[in-house]
Image 1 (cartoon, rainbow, N blue to C red):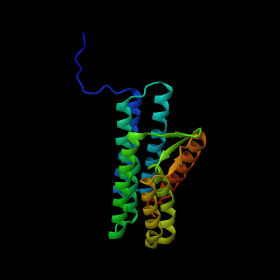
Image 2: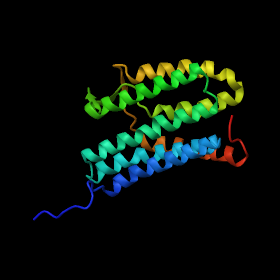
Image 3: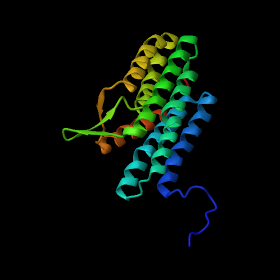
Amino acid sequence: MNQKRYFIVSPTWVDFLTLGSLWLACLGLFLAYYAHLSLAIVFMLMAMFVDMFDGLLARRLKLESEFGKQLDSFCDVFTYLVLPLYILFQMGMNDLLSLTILFIYLVCGLLRLSKFNLVGVIEAEGSVYHLGLQVIWSHLFVVLAFPIWLWLDETARYILIPILLLMSIFMISNLRFPKPTRYLLQTFIILFVTIFYFYLHLIGVYTP
């Protein structure tokens, strides 16, 4: 006899880990709203770190599910699109042209995630590829945009805008990008950059 469920979903602990990345991204949004951008970037990177390992753990522990994949994709919208774009907005990309490019990037990112839900990764010639640029690269863009804006002030937008537009095109292009597999190196880089931005926050560098 089937037991009556009290809820429409039965998430695993890996799904709750995925929701943890969403929680970190939301904290990042809160901090960005109050112009603590360096600390918002710290939480943005922490959200990426958690997101990197929830899928890996799900595969290793055989806890993969279609629900988990969909949940991860929805959380990615906040982690890799909403939060990075809002940090850029608070950084100073709030003129009409910048807002247009940010919107284009958001749309292309949503299209990229939707397509990935359908096709997943591509295996060819013994290698694994992603179709279109991964949305995860938005974090690298923000990490580099902060010092560029610190150096060039508002003129930085004329460097950042074409790069962001190019990334938008790459996300919906039919190009293949290798799937990163060097998790140890990626972990080290993320932790190093996270510590650096936390140091910036401690010394009072909240915004560029």
